[in-house]
Image (tube, rainbow over all chains, first blue to last red; front, side):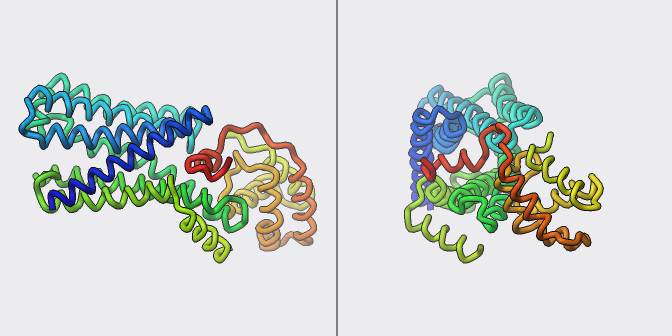
Length: 246
Length: 103
């Protein structure tokens, strides 16, 4: 099970980074910030956070200082990546003063947790025994995901109604729906991981934790692939379904 | 948040062409927009035209407005010609770019 979960996690990290880099390159061409922000979120959260924390926590043969530095860098990636997701949600779905304020407040949640871990127990305690304020990171991240999830689901619902009247492209509506599902998956997974931690089940090293982690990784990879690198046959099926439903 | 030019325009026209009050006209258009998945603050002229072609006749008939088809046709044609407000980038435009769905 550990090998299967490891491969699923590795696949998730690689696909997140690949899609993220594609979006950052797209941002270079278009000059628009939303694709840059979501690309950086995928690289920093889906790629760097998961990879650095996994190595820092589980590679017990590494020197303590290096393990502490790895989890610290992973946590910093989470802070920056989550802030990017909040800014993306603000710019894309709620470009108002209230949206900007929500993005700033939610973006600062993880930053506060990072600071608390740094000045209290330190990162070695987290790397070796998963101790300190950062153990609440999953719970805090879920709050960020809830907002992105709510806004994207609201827009996905609106777009599906527009598609029926011929006012929106079914492919774009489907992409927003897939993104909303990705955010819902992130929310649910964060709650589950926080719940596991609360009852003392480690995500790494237990069959329950590893199985759930692997399932989340594989489902997220499928959503990322269909949303950002959809095969032509999938797009065709989306268009056919829209014609039937119209 | 302020409503779009298209929203204000059709509500004024509804008040002028029917016996609806300002509140009734705006409420009815809001209901139709919700059914269409559109928002009063961002709806554009061509979108409003479709709403008046496909959804508003039924809403007006349900509220006892006679000749609702003719009224909707006239308002729909007029609102389609309205110049759009300069608005910020929409979520559709952003998600359209993310996988290269639009050039």
